[in-house]
Image (cartoon, rainbow, N blue to C red; front, side, top):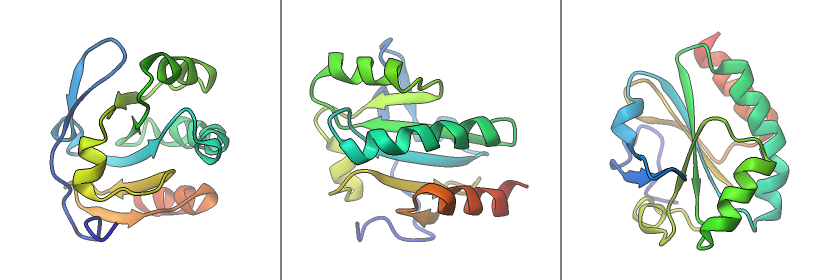
Length: 139
């Protein structure tokens, strides 16, 4: 977690969604971005998913985007969880935890908020704290 510090610019990644399409962090530059590290087997992550969905719906039209990065090793479980949790934003798989390890994510759920330049402005926020920070930045 020491690698993810406020004003830090995380390294780029290339990860795939469940359709095999590749995305990189650079694809989201110019928007405020919430990155949510999670997994289908993580109870607290799944409980947070309902709130995460409401955050996306609230801010999706305001120069905002969201990326869920799953640490699932079971691709089918990840895809099922996407459907159950109704994830309609970018959802990517970090099956071998290469990117998660590179940026120092050791516990999930873990969130990072990036500004439009791609720098970390907040980390490890949950619930209303996420909504408050995004409101401050976007409204």
